[in-house]
Amino acid sequence: MAYLTDRKRAEGMGSAKSGTEHHWNMTVSSAALVILVPLFIFTFGRILGSSHAEVLAYFARPFPAIVAGLTIIVGFLHFKGGVQVLIEDYVHGTLRKPLIIAMICLSYAAAGTGLFAIARIAL
Image (cartoon, rainbow, N blue to C red; front, top):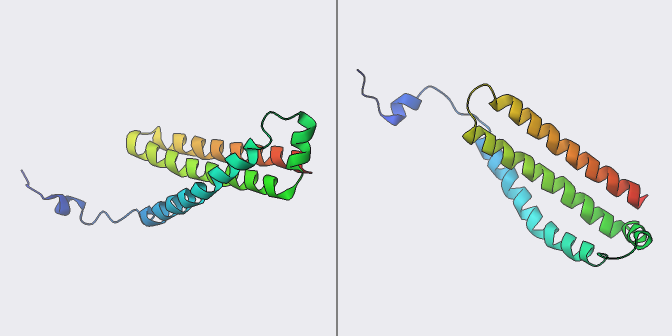
């Protein structure tokens, strides 16, 4: 029976090499969302309860459309990173990779759908 320390058990396994990059991406997207979400709420709240024609005219202007688009992009990229970490931490076995792939596809599909809707309104 071998009595190994935690360091000895981990030695030679190498690093994942993406932990720092993933942490940095999540930190940057969090900082961007701190600015974008209140800006989106104030921008969107101004038109809340208006008629369909007024909403179309409002989002035809560049600033509200850009704020909405950036919020959608950054929000879903942050969601993708967070769900990936959640799956990596709590799902084990062969289901891990398919779930990560499915969540990444879902994130990009939702972001693309949101951007398409903003583009349809703005153009």
